[in-house]
Amino acid sequence: MKYLGVESEQLHKLGGYHTAVEIAQQPEIWKKIWDMVQATSPEIVQYLDEALSHSKRIILTGAGTSAFIGITLKSLFQTKYGLITEAIPTTDLVTHPDHYFLRNTPTLLISFARSGNSPESAAAVILANECCDQVYHLIITCNIQGALAKVSSSQPMKVIFLPEESNDQSLAMTSSYTSMLLTGLLIARIHELPTLEDKLKNLCVFAQDFLDNNCHQLEDIAKLDFKRIVFLGSGPFFATATESSLKIQELTDGEVISKFETYLGFRHGPKSVIDSKTIIVYFLSSQNEHALKYELDLINSMKMGTRPLMEIGISESSKEVHSIFQNYSFGADKLVSDDYLMAIAYVLFAQVLGFYKSVELHLKPDSPSVNNDIARVVEGVHIYALI
Image 1 (tube, helix red, strand yellow):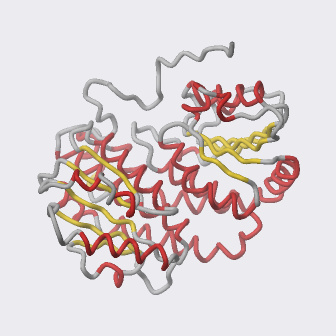
Image 2 (cartoon, helix red, strand yellow; image 1 turned 180 degrees about the vertical axis):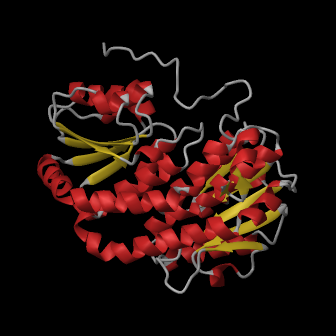
């Protein structure tokens, strides 16, 4: 059996079997999540209606990669439910709970976690209960046995468990990230599920096509001598750029330095990172023509000044990126035409490139941290009681 174009036996030898499988399985897991959310939508709606009828704000939280889910979805939740919505990592909530939790402001806290065993995950729930007179908890996790899933709460709580295979065994989160992101997106649009079915099907087709047809090209890019990579994205794609940056840095054990920015923000100093060993990856808007104008302006401006090693455009349709040296497009007969959904698919680029670059650097993609500087589940964090 091949995953990402590599035989299973060889993947085991490379120390990358789990990572390859977890990247490759994503379109199939997304279908399972769609079926699960559809089947349980009445009880999800019932809990949300209760929580939102009493809440004055929504906080989306998680640690590390899980925190980036909230960054993508905060504007979606805010526009759909008409409540101020913030994406605040658990790592901030735990150290400065008084900066974020408001005693007299009823809150819906939505927590995302792969394992749920990072110390901050359960601590954020407990602190919310201590700091808020009224808080509702919605937990989305890949691990039914995790500490977060088992935390006791004096306040209302609903836990949504994702398919078992989404609980990645590798250090780097791949299918767990996209699975939780899709689940959060579907919950934000829980009243619109019938209108999303065809888009979700197309998303899975696009993702599968990308995985089936681009592995060799990405393997070739991984062989290039690049030391830096920059991901640019705005709106729903900003967190995709953030997560993509982290994936490359994790899977290469920091040997490739990754950066992320918005298109306009990149002009205000961060552009100085570009040199002849830098790759720039552009995540391009398809729905938002206003934002796309700014994105294309930045791309055109890169023709002046220091030139990078390579520029890569990720788009739903290739027409927007005709001027870019190397283009990967999700274009097909039927477009998804939904930037929030495409934010889920775009991250596949960094996942696959990171896998191949890890192999190229003679690392083990399943556990690339040579000196164990980072681990699958964060350890050594002591949770202190509030004074």
